[in-house]
Length: 515
Image (cartoon, rainbow, N blue to C red; front, side, top):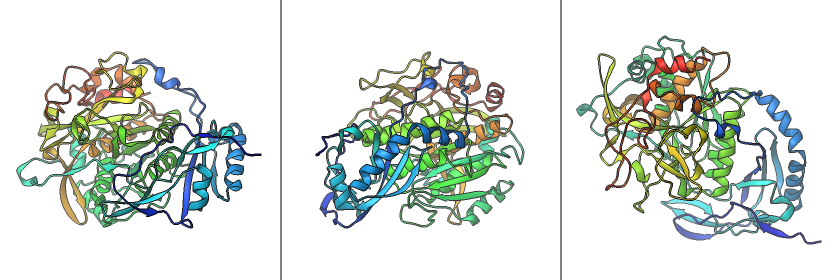
């Protein structure tokens, strides 16, 4: 009996922006990540400002057991479907709602009703497709996303190297923490693990040792975790080594004593979602905070990839993991050329603490002034999501009108030093560089949360309602814009779409979040 095939919701996809080279060889091996649908409620996004975000935070192991029971029929149905089309099951992970399958391209195309082609994108050979996927009608309500058919790059790192460092000021990462009043000491992050997501590049132990020696701090334990074929690859053509070094040295510099786990994945939607999902459910390293310095405009994401990422980030919130993400370095247009405002994803996800950027001035270790970062054609991203509704925690702030019917989540939530003109002194490839970008702000805030977590019986976790309920815990940024050719937003008293609630007043934040 022939099964009725239906379109898989959210699977609409466009081919990569490049020259089509030809069909994908029929025997090319393809590995897919099939994510099951999340059927749980979203209680956190209805919380009002100042509300406690405390949930029964089950352990990673407990959640895995719970989902193994809840999704048993879903896993069996997906496995039977895959095997019926000649595909092999590589992994089933109940906690992540993940089934990983592999098989030749011809059988993958037949299983999901699609045609795969190869494209040349900037000299890189990638795989892509047009249109939607189809699945049997009885599978459509089980599958949330089929990732891995498209291998084009999905994100860019949000760091900027200062071309003229001698003409500007710069800070060691721990000095930025001092300016903001971060906890002082050589072991303030002890007992915590900071997870860092990377989609390229790598780090050298010698760079890490040199950087922490310059900061007069102990060298942190840094663990490399390979995800979906990614690996620590310093010196590779991606040019992302500066990003990796920045993330490690900022996070570790402001939270001495914390361990760091770096999750390396391919720069694809599959790799990005897999990395976050793996970090969230990592029962070995167990990060209590995750830092993400990669992303791209919401318009670049397929609905199924965005949905799968959102589910992984929701899992983080439920497990008491704070996720910090860079809001982007392309100002209010997020680097898009249509003259319209855009926000960066995953920073725009309502479960993420979106981190914008400032230009910081300090003297004698004390903050003297701070404005919106907007210099030399780059600057902090910020605006309004067209994919996510305004969450409950933003009920009391004036978010500008959304650009679409589903939108309303304002970006960013918070801010910190990002302008390369007041950048961070980072060691990469044996050289000292002055680096800025909102890439630095995500690990900065991640380090702060790790230090606060070290003083609490349980991690802070989803802190948005508490943060939006106490504006006194921030340095309000009231000067500057993130406009491009007149398009964008201006800083204002209270929350704004440039720097959110403001930069951290860490001592007040410690009091607010002490538990």
